[in-house]
Image (tube, rainbow, N blue to C red; front, side, top):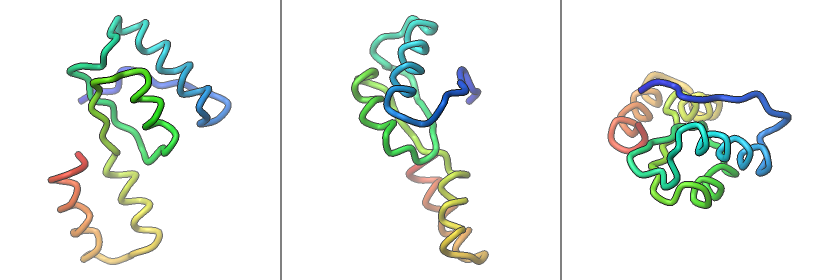
Length: 92
């Protein structure tokens, strides 16, 4: 796994995601998303846009970001081990 693209935008908005994905499709010359996996943090606005642009893309959420959000609410080694076990099977 390695990063292919990133961008600096004015905000994580629908318009910014559309612009980014339009550029990504053009640069990769890849219309369907088949055989691609895109990883992100928990951007709720990204999922519908991904479905609009890449019909067959696999989308996964970054375990580090999920754990950081989890850790804000639930602290402790037991909780960390729990989220890591979940990630192994479902998210990563």
